[in-house]
Length: 326
Ligand SMILES: *Cc1c(COP(=O)(O)O)cnc(C)c1O
Image (cartoon, rainbow, N blue to C red; front, top):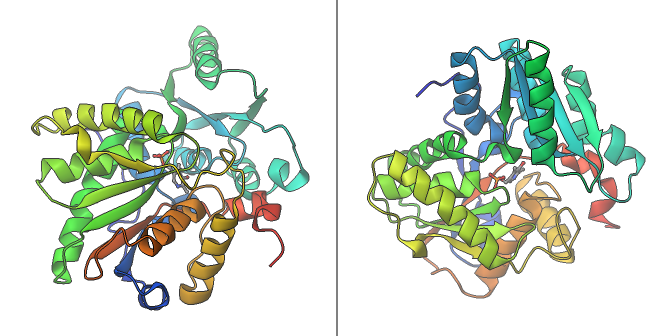
Protein backbone atom coordinates (compact mmCIF):
# COMPACT_ATOMS: atom_id res chain seq x y z
CA UNK A 1 0.00 0.00 0.00
CA UNK A 2 1.60 3.27 -1.13
CA UNK A 3 1.89 5.86 1.60
CA UNK A 4 3.50 9.26 2.06
CA UNK A 5 4.52 10.65 5.45
CA UNK A 6 2.45 13.70 6.42
CA UNK A 7 1.19 13.38 9.99
CA UNK A 8 3.24 13.57 13.17
CA UNK A 9 2.56 10.15 14.68
CA UNK A 10 1.80 8.70 17.11
CA UNK A 11 -0.44 11.49 18.37
CA UNK A 12 -0.51 11.90 22.17
CA UNK A 13 -2.99 10.05 24.38
CA UNK A 14 -3.69 12.27 27.39
CA UNK A 15 -5.77 11.94 30.55
CA UNK A 16 -8.68 14.36 31.04
CA UNK A 17 -8.56 14.32 34.83
CA UNK A 18 -10.43 17.54 35.58
CA UNK A 19 -13.17 16.80 33.06
CA UNK A 20 -13.55 13.24 34.40
CA UNK A 21 -13.89 14.57 37.96
CA UNK A 22 -16.30 17.30 36.89
CA UNK A 23 -18.59 14.78 35.19
CA UNK A 24 -18.18 12.16 37.92
CA UNK A 25 -18.23 9.48 35.28
CA UNK A 26 -15.76 7.09 33.69
CA UNK A 27 -12.05 7.81 33.28
CA UNK A 28 -11.80 10.08 30.22
CA UNK A 29 -8.82 10.39 27.92
CA UNK A 30 -8.24 12.27 24.69
CA UNK A 31 -6.44 11.04 21.57
CA UNK A 32 -4.92 14.21 20.13
CA UNK A 33 -5.51 13.79 16.41
CA UNK A 34 -5.91 17.56 16.31
CA UNK A 35 -2.12 17.54 16.77
CA UNK A 36 -1.12 15.71 13.59
CA UNK A 37 0.84 18.83 12.70
CA UNK A 38 0.84 19.74 9.03
CA UNK A 39 -1.29 22.75 8.05
CA UNK A 40 -2.71 23.08 11.60
CA UNK A 41 -3.46 19.37 11.78
CA UNK A 42 -6.56 17.23 12.09
CA UNK A 43 -7.90 13.79 11.27
CA UNK A 44 -7.74 14.07 7.47
CA UNK A 45 -3.94 13.81 7.38
CA UNK A 46 -4.05 10.12 8.33
CA UNK A 47 -6.33 9.43 5.36
CA UNK A 48 -4.26 11.66 3.08
CA UNK A 49 -1.11 9.65 3.77
CA UNK A 50 -2.69 6.75 1.87
CA UNK A 51 -4.72 8.76 -0.66
CA UNK A 52 -1.79 10.93 -1.71
CA UNK A 53 0.48 7.89 -1.58
CA UNK A 54 -1.75 6.37 -4.25
CA UNK A 55 -1.89 9.67 -6.19
CA UNK A 56 1.91 9.98 -6.27
CA UNK A 57 2.27 6.31 -7.26
CA UNK A 58 -0.11 6.96 -10.17
CA UNK A 59 1.93 9.97 -11.31
CA UNK A 60 -0.80 12.52 -10.56
CA UNK A 61 0.11 16.21 -10.80
CA UNK A 62 -3.13 17.83 -9.64
CA UNK A 63 -5.23 16.89 -6.61
CA UNK A 64 -8.94 17.66 -6.64
CA UNK A 65 -11.22 17.49 -3.66
CA UNK A 66 -14.43 19.04 -2.38
CA UNK A 67 -16.12 20.11 0.81
CA UNK A 68 -17.85 23.00 2.51
CA UNK A 69 -16.16 26.41 2.51
CA UNK A 70 -14.95 25.84 6.07
CA UNK A 71 -13.81 22.28 5.31
CA UNK A 72 -10.94 21.05 7.47
CA UNK A 73 -10.38 18.29 4.93
CA UNK A 74 -9.84 20.84 2.17
CA UNK A 75 -7.32 22.74 4.31
CA UNK A 76 -5.33 19.62 5.18
CA UNK A 77 -5.36 18.50 1.54
CA UNK A 78 -4.04 21.91 0.47
CA UNK A 79 -1.25 21.71 3.05
CA UNK A 80 -0.27 18.19 2.03
CA UNK A 81 -0.20 19.20 -1.64
CA UNK A 82 2.03 22.16 -0.85
CA UNK A 83 4.45 19.87 0.98
CA UNK A 84 4.47 17.30 -1.82
CA UNK A 85 4.68 19.87 -4.64
CA UNK A 86 1.32 18.96 -6.16
CA UNK A 87 -1.23 21.41 -7.56
CA UNK A 88 -4.41 21.53 -5.46
CA UNK A 89 -7.91 22.49 -6.55
CA UNK A 90 -10.68 22.77 -3.98
CA UNK A 91 -14.35 22.75 -4.98
CA UNK A 92 -16.14 24.28 -2.05
CA UNK A 93 -19.82 24.76 -1.40
CA UNK A 94 -21.20 27.68 0.56
CA UNK A 95 -24.18 27.78 2.86
CA UNK A 96 -27.26 29.97 2.47
CA UNK A 97 -26.09 32.86 4.70
CA UNK A 98 -22.57 33.88 3.72
CA UNK A 99 -20.99 36.21 6.24
CA UNK A 100 -17.50 37.70 6.18
CA UNK A 101 -15.70 35.29 8.53
CA UNK A 102 -17.25 32.27 6.78
CA UNK A 103 -16.06 33.54 3.41
CA UNK A 104 -12.62 34.82 4.34
CA UNK A 105 -11.43 33.59 7.73
CA UNK A 106 -10.79 30.22 9.39
CA UNK A 107 -10.11 27.44 6.92
CA UNK A 108 -10.75 29.66 3.89
CA UNK A 109 -7.94 31.98 4.91
CA UNK A 110 -5.54 29.06 5.27
CA UNK A 111 -6.60 27.42 1.97
CA UNK A 112 -5.67 30.59 0.11
CA UNK A 113 -2.46 31.02 2.09
CA UNK A 114 -1.44 27.50 1.07
CA UNK A 115 -1.85 28.41 -2.58
CA UNK A 116 -4.79 26.13 -3.33
CA UNK A 117 -7.01 27.07 -6.25
CA UNK A 118 -10.46 27.56 -4.74
CA UNK A 119 -13.68 27.30 -6.74
CA UNK A 120 -16.98 28.03 -5.07
CA UNK A 121 -20.06 26.19 -6.27
CA UNK A 122 -23.70 26.80 -5.56
CA UNK A 123 -25.27 24.90 -2.66
CA UNK A 124 -27.57 23.13 -5.14
CA UNK A 125 -24.73 21.65 -7.25
CA UNK A 126 -23.56 18.10 -6.47
CA UNK A 127 -19.95 18.09 -5.32
CA UNK A 128 -19.38 14.67 -6.86
CA UNK A 129 -20.57 15.94 -10.27
CA UNK A 130 -18.42 19.06 -9.99
CA UNK A 131 -15.35 16.95 -9.15
CA UNK A 132 -15.92 14.54 -12.06
CA UNK A 133 -16.48 17.39 -14.48
CA UNK A 134 -13.36 19.27 -13.42
CA UNK A 135 -11.26 16.08 -13.60
CA UNK A 136 -12.45 15.58 -17.21
CA UNK A 137 -11.48 19.16 -18.09
CA UNK A 138 -8.03 18.70 -16.57
CA UNK A 139 -7.48 15.40 -18.40
CA UNK A 140 -8.52 17.01 -21.67
CA UNK A 141 -5.92 19.72 -21.01
CA UNK A 142 -3.20 17.09 -20.53
CA UNK A 143 -2.99 17.15 -16.73
CA UNK A 144 -3.08 14.07 -14.48
CA UNK A 145 -5.72 14.72 -11.87
CA UNK A 146 -6.41 12.54 -8.82
CA UNK A 147 -9.81 12.96 -7.19
CA UNK A 148 -10.21 12.61 -3.44
CA UNK A 149 -13.84 12.15 -2.39
CA UNK A 150 -15.44 14.48 0.17
CA UNK A 151 -13.73 13.99 3.54
CA UNK A 152 -11.26 11.51 2.03
CA UNK A 153 -13.73 8.81 2.98
CA UNK A 154 -13.20 5.76 0.80
CA UNK A 155 -11.41 2.44 1.26
CA UNK A 156 -7.91 3.89 0.71
CA UNK A 157 -8.48 6.72 3.20
CA UNK A 158 -9.89 4.31 5.81
CA UNK A 159 -6.54 2.54 6.13
CA UNK A 160 -5.28 5.62 7.96
CA UNK A 161 -7.83 5.15 10.73
CA UNK A 162 -7.45 1.37 10.81
CA UNK A 163 -3.81 2.07 11.75
CA UNK A 164 -4.89 4.70 14.27
CA UNK A 165 -6.94 2.02 16.03
CA UNK A 166 -3.82 -0.13 16.44
CA UNK A 167 -1.78 2.87 17.54
CA UNK A 168 -4.33 3.69 20.23
CA UNK A 169 -4.60 0.13 21.56
CA UNK A 170 -0.79 -0.06 21.83
CA UNK A 171 -0.56 3.32 23.55
CA UNK A 172 -3.21 2.37 26.08
CA UNK A 173 -1.41 -0.91 26.75
CA UNK A 174 1.84 0.99 27.38
CA UNK A 175 0.00 2.97 30.08
CA UNK A 176 -1.33 -0.23 31.58
CA UNK A 177 -4.95 0.43 30.64
CA UNK A 178 -7.48 -0.88 28.14
CA UNK A 179 -9.51 1.52 26.04
CA UNK A 180 -13.08 0.34 26.60
CA UNK A 181 -14.66 2.85 24.23
CA UNK A 182 -13.78 5.54 21.71
CA UNK A 183 -16.14 8.46 21.08
CA UNK A 184 -15.76 10.14 17.69
CA UNK A 185 -17.61 12.63 15.49
CA UNK A 186 -18.94 10.84 12.40
CA UNK A 187 -19.69 12.68 9.17
CA UNK A 188 -18.29 11.45 5.85
CA UNK A 189 -17.70 8.14 7.71
CA UNK A 190 -14.04 7.32 7.02
CA UNK A 191 -12.72 8.04 10.50
CA UNK A 192 -15.42 6.02 12.23
CA UNK A 193 -15.32 3.19 9.66
CA UNK A 194 -11.52 2.94 9.71
CA UNK A 195 -11.46 2.72 13.52
CA UNK A 196 -14.14 0.00 13.58
CA UNK A 197 -12.39 -2.02 10.86
CA UNK A 198 -8.97 -1.63 12.46
CA UNK A 199 -10.17 -2.70 15.91
CA UNK A 200 -12.05 -5.66 14.44
CA UNK A 201 -9.01 -6.79 12.45
CA UNK A 202 -6.84 -6.93 15.60
CA UNK A 203 -9.71 -8.47 17.61
CA UNK A 204 -9.79 -5.64 20.13
CA UNK A 205 -12.99 -5.35 22.16
CA UNK A 206 -12.90 -1.54 22.26
CA UNK A 207 -16.33 -0.17 21.25
CA UNK A 208 -16.55 2.79 18.89
CA UNK A 209 -19.37 5.28 19.48
CA UNK A 210 -20.04 7.65 16.62
CA UNK A 211 -21.75 10.97 17.31
CA UNK A 212 -23.49 12.15 14.14
CA UNK A 213 -23.07 15.80 13.16
CA UNK A 214 -25.44 15.90 10.19
CA UNK A 215 -27.33 12.67 9.45
CA UNK A 216 -29.88 10.53 11.23
CA UNK A 217 -28.79 7.39 13.01
CA UNK A 218 -30.06 4.83 10.48
CA UNK A 219 -28.48 6.37 7.40
CA UNK A 220 -25.19 7.18 9.17
CA UNK A 221 -24.89 3.65 10.57
CA UNK A 222 -25.62 2.19 7.14
CA UNK A 223 -22.94 4.26 5.41
CA UNK A 224 -20.33 3.65 8.12
CA UNK A 225 -21.06 -0.08 8.14
CA UNK A 226 -20.68 -0.38 4.36
CA UNK A 227 -17.28 1.33 4.43
CA UNK A 228 -16.11 -0.47 7.58
CA UNK A 229 -17.08 -3.88 6.18
CA UNK A 230 -15.22 -3.15 2.94
CA UNK A 231 -12.15 -2.05 4.91
CA UNK A 232 -12.26 -5.08 7.22
CA UNK A 233 -12.36 -7.39 4.19
CA UNK A 234 -9.43 -5.56 2.58
CA UNK A 235 -7.49 -6.03 5.84
CA UNK A 236 -8.12 -9.77 5.64
CA UNK A 237 -10.37 -9.78 8.72
CA UNK A 238 -13.46 -11.90 9.26
CA UNK A 239 -16.86 -10.53 8.27
CA UNK A 240 -17.72 -7.47 10.35
CA UNK A 241 -20.76 -7.92 12.62
CA UNK A 242 -23.36 -5.19 11.99
CA UNK A 243 -23.64 -4.36 15.70
CA UNK A 244 -20.09 -3.00 15.82
CA UNK A 245 -21.31 0.19 14.18
CA UNK A 246 -23.11 2.41 16.69
CA UNK A 247 -24.22 5.99 16.06
CA UNK A 248 -26.08 8.47 18.27
CA UNK A 249 -27.90 11.24 16.42
CA UNK A 250 -29.25 13.16 19.43
CA UNK A 251 -26.65 15.93 19.16
CA UNK A 252 -27.02 17.04 15.52
CA UNK A 253 -29.46 19.86 16.21
CA UNK A 254 -31.01 21.36 13.10
CA UNK A 255 -28.24 20.26 10.75
CA UNK A 256 -24.62 20.33 9.63
CA UNK A 257 -22.71 23.24 11.17
CA UNK A 258 -25.89 24.52 12.86
CA UNK A 259 -25.01 25.39 16.46
CA UNK A 260 -26.67 23.71 19.45
CA UNK A 261 -26.73 24.74 23.10
CA UNK A 262 -25.15 21.42 24.09
CA UNK A 263 -22.26 22.05 21.65
CA UNK A 264 -21.65 25.51 23.16
CA UNK A 265 -21.64 24.15 26.70
CA UNK A 266 -19.35 21.26 25.74
CA UNK A 267 -16.81 23.56 24.06
CA UNK A 268 -16.73 25.86 27.10
CA UNK A 269 -16.45 22.98 29.55
CA UNK A 270 -13.54 21.33 27.66
CA UNK A 271 -11.77 24.69 27.39
CA UNK A 272 -12.27 25.63 31.05
CA UNK A 273 -11.51 22.28 32.67
CA UNK A 274 -8.71 21.09 30.36
CA UNK A 275 -7.57 23.96 28.13
CA UNK A 276 -8.74 21.75 25.26
CA UNK A 277 -9.94 23.67 22.21
CA UNK A 278 -12.75 22.01 20.25
CA UNK A 279 -14.60 23.17 17.12
CA UNK A 280 -18.26 24.10 16.61
CA UNK A 281 -19.03 21.72 13.70
CA UNK A 282 -17.59 18.33 14.71
CA UNK A 283 -15.75 17.94 18.00
CA UNK A 284 -18.03 20.30 19.95
CA UNK A 285 -21.03 18.14 19.06
CA UNK A 286 -19.05 14.93 19.65
CA UNK A 287 -18.07 16.17 23.12
CA UNK A 288 -21.70 17.13 23.75
CA UNK A 289 -22.50 13.51 22.89
CA UNK A 290 -19.85 12.16 25.25
CA UNK A 291 -21.09 14.39 28.09
CA UNK A 292 -24.71 13.42 27.41
CA UNK A 293 -23.87 9.70 27.43
CA UNK A 294 -21.92 10.03 30.69
CA UNK A 295 -24.87 11.87 32.27
CA UNK A 296 -27.27 9.15 31.09
CA UNK A 297 -25.10 6.50 32.77
CA UNK A 298 -24.18 4.90 29.45
CA UNK A 299 -20.64 4.06 30.61
CA UNK A 300 -19.56 2.12 33.67
CA UNK A 301 -17.69 4.21 36.22
CA UNK A 302 -14.47 2.19 35.96
CA UNK A 303 -14.31 2.24 32.15
CA UNK A 304 -11.65 4.07 30.11
CA UNK A 305 -13.35 6.22 27.49
CA UNK A 306 -11.23 7.90 24.81
CA UNK A 307 -12.44 11.03 23.06
CA UNK A 308 -10.91 11.19 19.60
CA UNK A 309 -10.12 14.86 19.04
CA UNK A 310 -10.30 15.05 15.26
CA UNK A 311 -9.23 18.71 15.00
CA UNK A 312 -11.16 21.54 13.39
CA UNK A 313 -10.29 24.44 15.72
CA UNK A 314 -9.53 26.76 12.74
CA UNK A 315 -13.28 26.58 12.13
CA UNK A 316 -13.84 28.61 15.33
CA UNK A 317 -12.70 31.63 13.33
CA UNK A 318 -14.95 30.78 10.37
CA UNK A 319 -18.06 30.52 12.54
CA UNK A 320 -17.36 33.09 15.29
CA UNK A 321 -21.08 33.50 15.98
CA UNK A 322 -21.53 29.77 16.66
CA UNK A 323 -20.43 30.07 20.29
CA UNK A 324 -23.04 32.72 21.03
CA UNK A 325 -22.77 35.02 24.08
CA UNK A 326 -20.75 33.62 26.97
C1 LIG B 1 -13.89 15.63 8.78
C2 LIG B 1 -13.94 15.81 10.25
C3 LIG B 1 -14.60 14.89 11.09
C4 LIG B 1 -15.39 13.75 10.56
O1 LIG B 1 -14.63 12.71 10.02
P1 LIG B 1 -15.27 11.83 8.86
O2 LIG B 1 -14.21 10.86 8.52
O3 LIG B 1 -15.64 12.77 7.76
O4 LIG B 1 -16.51 11.18 9.41
C5 LIG B 1 -14.54 15.09 12.44
N1 LIG B 1 -13.90 16.15 12.96
C6 LIG B 1 -13.29 17.07 12.20
C7 LIG B 1 -12.64 18.21 12.87
C8 LIG B 1 -13.28 16.93 10.82
O5 LIG B 1 -12.66 17.85 10.07
